[in-house]
Structure formats: C-alpha cells, structure tokens
Length: 314
Length: 284
Image (cartoon, rainbow over all chains, first blue to last red):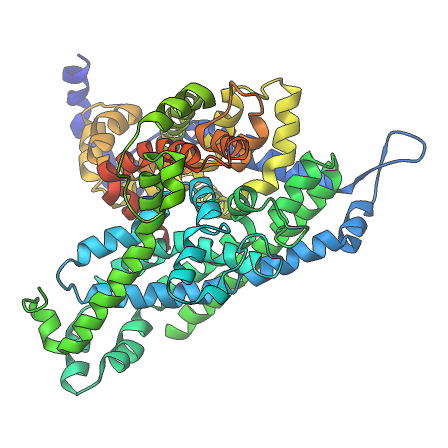
C-alpha cells in the first residue's frame, strides 16, 4: 500500500547510495542493530553472564564466625585438600586418553569410507547412528551390556575367553576404561562424519599423482591426505578435549554415579554432588571457576597456536 | 558383490584391500548398531525370553512392556513435557538468533565484531559451570519444577550456536536483493521476514535440528531444575525409571526406546541438516 509512494523515492535513495556507497547500502538508525540484538542479549545475560559473575562471588563467600558471610579463599583451600577433588581431576585427565584413540579410529574409518566402495553410505549412516542417541539412553543400555550376565561377558565366554569376564562397571580398576569405551562408542560417529566431509572437498589430483608414483595406501594418506586435514583434525581434538572435561556428566551419572566409591568421579559430578547433595554451593562454585579458567586457557592456547601457524603461512 | 566397484577405487586399492575395508566397516557397523538392536529386541521380549537370549530377536514378541511402561512410568507425560520444552526453546532461540544474526551480518555499528566473537566464544562454556547460580535464581523466582525454568536456560544456551550458523549464512547471501527491497520502501524487519528468511531455509533448519537434538537430550539441567514427577523431561525421567525398575531389563529398554524414537524420526527427516550443523563449526 505504501509501495507506490515510496517507489518514487527510489531514485533519490539510489543517488544517495552512490555518494556514500558503504554506509547507505542498507541504511538504518544508529540504535536499530542494538534493538535487534536485545532479545538474544537478554537470554545470554541471564544464562551466561549472570551465572559467570555469580560463581566467582559465591566461590569467595564463606560463612563468618560472627554469623553472616565474609569473603576469602576457604572454598578453594578446601577443594585443594579434598581427595575426591584430586580423584576427579585425575579421572578427567585419564578420560583424555580417549581423544587420540577416537581421532585415530575416526580417521581410519573416514579414509576407508572415502574410497566410496559399494554400500559406503550405509556404513556411514550406521557409524553415525550412536551419535544421535541421548547419552542417558546409551548409558542405560550399556549398564546391561556390561552387566555380569550381559552380552560382553556372554560373548567372551562363548568364544572361549571366559577368563576375561569382568564386572565392567563395578570393578574400580575397570570402571573408567569402560566408561571411556562408551564415550568413544558415541563420539566416534561425529569424528568420522566430520573427517569424511572434509575429505570430500580435497582435490584428488595430488592423490592420483602419489598413486601413480607408486605410493601405497598408507603413504598416500600419511603424506598427502592427512596433512590437508590438519585444521579439521585440530578442531575435532579441541572439541573432544573440552568434551572430556565438561560434557561427560550424563555418562557418569547414568552408569555409575561416580562409583564404586570415588573410582569414576569426575569434575562435573563433583560440582553437582557438592552443590546438590552436600549443600555446599561455595565449593561447587570454586570448582566451577577452576574448570572455566582451565577451559578458557585451553581455548586461548589453541587460538595462539593457530594464529602462529597462519602467521608462518603468510 | 565385491567385483563391481567405482572407478576411483579400482585405480588405487588392490582387491585384498577392498575386502579388508569391507571387513573393518562391517565390524564397526555391527558394534555401532548392536546396542540399538539390543534395545529394540529387548523391548519386545518378556523377561523369561530375555534371560534365555540377548542375541536373538523375540520369538514371541509382546507389547506387554509397552503397556506396562506407559501405565507405570508416566513416560507419556514426560514425553509431552519434552516435546513442549524442545519446541518452545528451539522456537524462541531461533527467533532471537535470527534477529541478532541479521544485525551482525548486515548492519554496521560500533562493537559489532567484538559482540559476535563474544557470543561465539560462549559456545565452549560448560553448562555445569552455570548450574549453581541458575538453580538459586530459579528457586528465588519460584520457577523450580516448572517447564519455563529449563526453557529460559535452554534458549540462552542454544543461542550462541544459532547466531554463529545464521550470521555466516546471512553474510553469504547476495545483498543486492535486500538493497533493492529497501529502496522500494521495505523496512529492515520486512526485508528480513520477506526476503532473507525464505532464502535461509537450509540454515534455519540446520540450527533448529541441531538445537532440538541438544535440548531433547539434555540431562544435567533438567535433572536439577525439574525434580517433581509431573515436571520431568523424558530423558531425565528415564534415568529415574531405570533406577526404579533396573531388574526388569525389557521394561527399561522399552522406556529407552520410547525416548529414542522421536529423535530417530527427526534424524531421518533432518539428517543432512544435522550433519551440516556439526560440520559447520569446523569451518571456524
């Protein structure tokens, strides 16, 4: 309805556009962008900014002898002397071992799929399927697969390896590797699909050249394919390192609740337990601060490494 | 079966290698699918048949578990909660992210790049870090045990990824059309609604599908914020259900199957959007 009247202004607006091409491309009032950002900003402040400020405050807050609260490092001191905290850190570090395993396996499967043999799309879909399952669903299923009369032990017995049967989630020495295997089970599909997507965009002329020169399968991929995959491998490794520190709660909660004893306790579970079972939000917040700082440090390091690399290229 | 092959393969890989590849891929496919197969076959067995074999499909399939799970576990109620939470969170987050991403992609204003990289960097913040203050806040405003408590938090937590995906997509659109529409008198919001959004279906679907998976599968926040039986989401309720009925494997697996089916359907419908969303992050 206003179309007719405004289209008359068209040429004038275009002339103005010629004078100041950059600014008038899509003109708007100076405050318009902030208005557009407002809803997202409101949710971000609520879900991220407020809690991030609050954990620092809560972590420094300690009950005073006189009643009320005072500020100090008591929560941090307690955290450092708590054996459960040390166990949790150690276990998160042990979980990191699954990152190289996962990366190597995902690379192997994506390289095989890249050959695009008959049925490769089916294999890709099958390998990816675990990743769409909810972690609690995976965890609950593996409780039964790893149970005393579960499929893993049954299969071992059936194949004459009965001496290897174990209480996979109940043995303090085995519980972490068992949880690790479940994490690898679910995350492998992500890595494989990610790597394969990147490989599909690699030009094949270098590969063909290497093959005509007589390089074998291993050499071709070692010297031609994998170097070109560097950035995506790095991305996957960083994502999985973060995952091992801050996204494994659901596995541990559904399968072992940190047990037996403390043998599968991890940082997230330690935070959750202190906050909601031991009613110690100050300690939970102190650990949350430490976790946040550690992850920020990791990201900072990765950005530094990456910019150094691109600096060398230039 | 292994005699016909694509041209690329026949160039480099010897036959033995091809057989070996198939063997490795078949083995890993079996490992990947077995737990799902186990879940499905167990859900249709009675306990006696389950104890006699965990490999074979049910000889006498029964719907008894399904009936019992629905009758006992409040699973349907939890599923309804999950559907509401997922739909509302994803809808609100996408709407807010579209507006923000459009400003970040198309408008010039002081602080734009800093705001974008600030939002993107929030993607790495672990939810467990935010949990305690958010819980105390929800207690204060009396939202604990209500669906809005988790919805508000899920919206906030999913916005960074959506803003990242959509900003990149909007930037790649040719802006000449938008320019022309503006010259014809369309308001910025009109341009966004009538021109940008219809062109952005792939990016919108990617953001919606990835976030729907995330919200539906979220455990930690749902566990802490929704502690009453009526307010639980399906995934959080399922962990409780397992604790309650752990010796009845077929019943628990029925619950797991019920929790999985909606996501399996979403995956069948939106697989390529889901994968695109996962891969998009690596471009950075």
